Image (cartoon, rainbow, N blue to C red; front, side):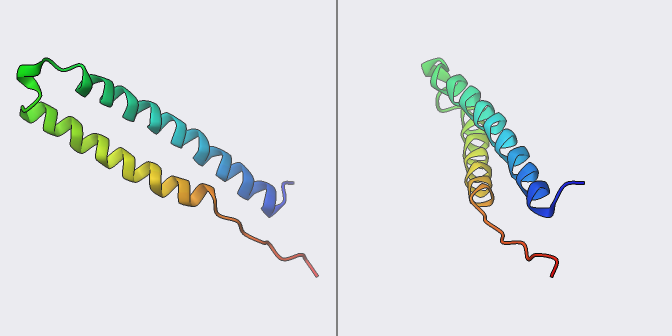
Length: 77
């Protein structure tokens, strides 16, 4: 049986994995935006990409806060 501390660390590890996947998605969208033809850089698609990138940045920032959380679990007695 895992302790609460171990379960918490496992959850944090899952968050770290999720954050790295979200960073990859953000980077893919940024590459797409950066490599858009000049005539599309002011298009609605470019705006949508930037909005998605910004939203992913916010998610990453929130996950970084969670990832750095430290909880001191009390002992049994």
